[in-house]
Length: 143
Image 1 (spheres, rainbow, N blue to C red):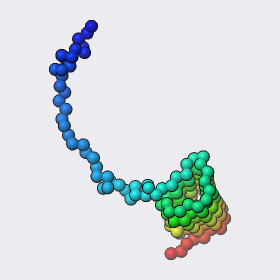
Image 2 (spheres, one colour; image 1 turned 120 degrees about the horizontal axis):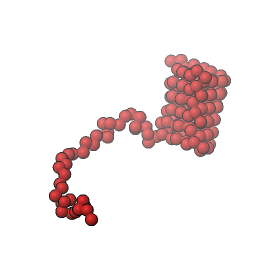
Image 3 (cartoon, rainbow, N blue to C red; image 1 turned 120 degrees about the vertical axis):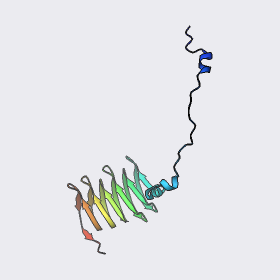
Image 4 (cartoon, rainbow, N blue to C red; image 1 turned 60 degrees about the horizontal axis):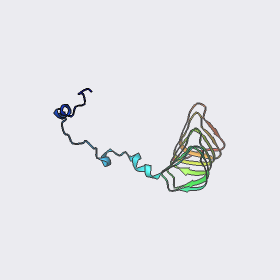
């Protein structure tokens, strides 16, 4: 048998590894303002259906299907496969899927190329990508 794994030989081998203190960043210094919102984010996942009222979250992300009225929500994002039906008043909205109903955006509304917004829409600023659709009554919020 080979003496390759001979314990005497292994005992003679002592690697020289320098000890060092782990460099762990201060998490409070590293956190971005969006990280604080993570605890107040509600994600409705793919193939999930939900109906009712949604309130009190900073960001609502719709990947599935939602029929609801929302209040006290800062922003809504409807992903490419998501569908939202209902009423919402938010600061910002990004629509890449389908939104049907009343939508009041006190800040910026963004409609992606795959996005369709149907219903009464009011906004302060808007960006619609080539291919995005905005159908219904449209009103600009002045100020």
